Length: 133
Image (tube, rainbow, N blue to C red; front, side, top):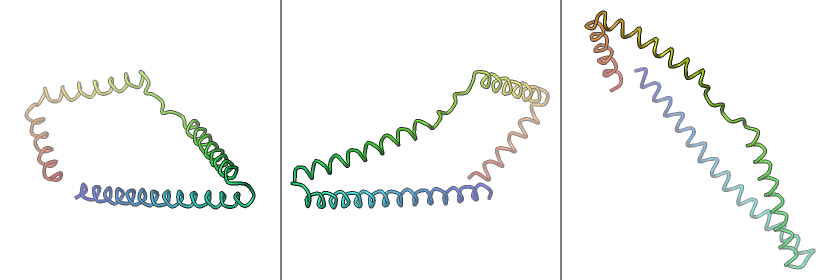
């Protein structure tokens, strides 16, 4: 029952994220269409003041400068994000020490009463099988 609740919440979260991704894709497409028409209108306005080759050159230069500014700002934003720190050797040693200590404690209990450990493992398996299937 608890697992079903967790899975249904997870499914709703996945559905929500899929919807968000689709909406972002549609918004991106509409943004590209709007930018295309804006560049086209800019070119048309430049044609009123310059001959066709000069208007095309000015339009291309403007788009190139704006694209370079966006790319440079994206580079700066991505550069600021600190990389995830690598786990230290001390942490690895501490984790291995804790797991070895826990394993030793469990081994002692199993060696003292193996039938009880087997019974508990069997009951845990039955419970897991009943609720996970």
